[in-house]
Length: 386
Image 1: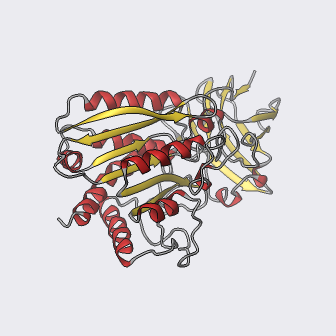
Image 2: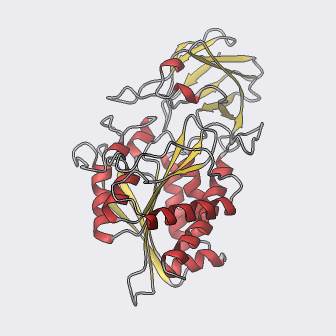
Image 3: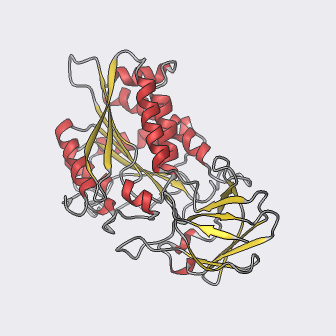
């Protein structure tokens, strides 16, 4: 007998009817206190060898319906290897099919990245840093979330303190359903704290790093697409963060004000565009030619470092002075007058480098995270006049 469950870390689905394996009817549950929904993740058991067809009936009412055409659902039997399935979007419904090879198979919008995996990532990163010289990595709790979870902040301080090193800030997954941001972070941290990587050693020696691997742990655990436990889109709270409803932003912005900031990268995923791209802060009042040079140089350096990145496709650039200052990249650019950017990665495949079996995958997000060190090194040299 087929059974479908989502009552686990990051799970989301509602079963309408699972009596017929060829027409299993489902719907996605909206974020708590919010109208947003698109993320789903669930387990199917008891379906080995059965031709299964799943129909998400409310897909046409989701937050970003432009995300469905050309999209393929990911599946895994072992929760490590995530492959794409046959998927069709028509008539407001998302239908996908598979004959499971085992009695346990998972389906998701993108490969999930659980709170447990995030905890493992932090522990592994701290362990790797123990053997490093030239600085120190510390873990602090910037504050607590509404559900009482710690908001973890990793801080690497270079031992070179003759003058204050550049302060590099990187945050990921303000929108909890954008799990590719956590896979990016896994690759980024693995390389940054690799004792045998000379470029990583150069960066650690010449900059301080402040890293928030998971900005929205409550939303991640609850299986939300976009919001925290109060139904708040964190990336619309940076101008005047409410400590009672968006403590995640209040605490991290306060930490930024205390430490200072010279570089900011906010890592996200985009539902509709099948590309990796950077959104800058061109629409912020007072955006300078120097700031544009920083932005252009970083994007070109990342394009050289990774064929998965491009600069042709992306969001429409805001007109001068028209930027939404409640968005992290815009508020940080205005607040510190430094380079601030949003990296977007696709839920779909990368149209420039398609992979029929896996699409844009956790592994490719991790490689893009590793490649980002090359672009940061280029920015650092230019920023310091080297």
